Length: 184
Picture (cartoon, rainbow, N blue to C red):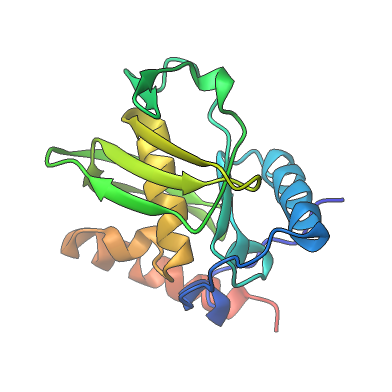
């Protein structure tokens, strides 16, 4: 059953999440529920704080668009998106490429707002897996953007924090409205 998605204004979205220390049945259940929730909401990623858990855990699935990356390396080898999707990871780290690009982003926790966000085009992500192994991904495109977006969530950062000064001014009133519309 899909979980409720935490909405803008809830303090858990601003927390630095705790590392996952032990992958047990509760983590496996949470992952299954997060995947179901992400699919049900037509999302490409979901971080644990978005479903009320302050753990460094996220899921991503961009397999609906196999052309969304121009390259993908997994542990130094060329790979296909379908081989790693859905991507489930804990306690991630990111290294950013130098070149940046602007693209539209939205968030399941900030309904109805999509904005242009400037982010690094390429990333190298170290992604510990539930089975104790580690994937090192090098990629660009939508997968790189989704990794940055979901890992930001694990650090209490929302995509609206990454907007330009003009972008922040343009969404200020809409964000205030979301706060007043939020159920208590």
